[in-house]
Image (cartoon, rainbow, N blue to C red; front, side, top):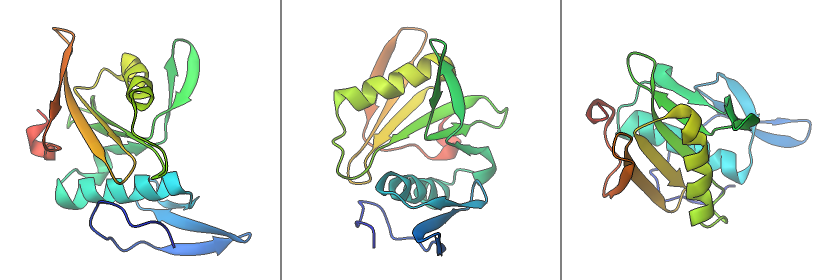
Length: 151
């Protein structure tokens, strides 16, 4: 079984496929290989939906984007009701420290996305910051905002 995270426990569907365990991704509507990072991603998405009321239809997971002409894949992006990216989540496995390097990675992705909220998590520690694009500043928040408070 996967490591207990600093999130509520949710019920997921699992299956074995070609001797590998998979978890059902309710947003992508398919089974995904269950890795420690995927475990964090699935739990964090469940938390956003269940605890912060983010609509699952406005959540995108592991989509490609171009950063300085390089193809990258973000973990989670939440769109606003006008389908403009509003929040980016960078997930790491629980054994990976949430370091400046992780923030830098998320910030690079945000050069393309231009979201106002950035979250980094390893499932044990979660950091959220608000980005003031106009003034080029950011501030860390004590709590991750509810969906309705993003705008």
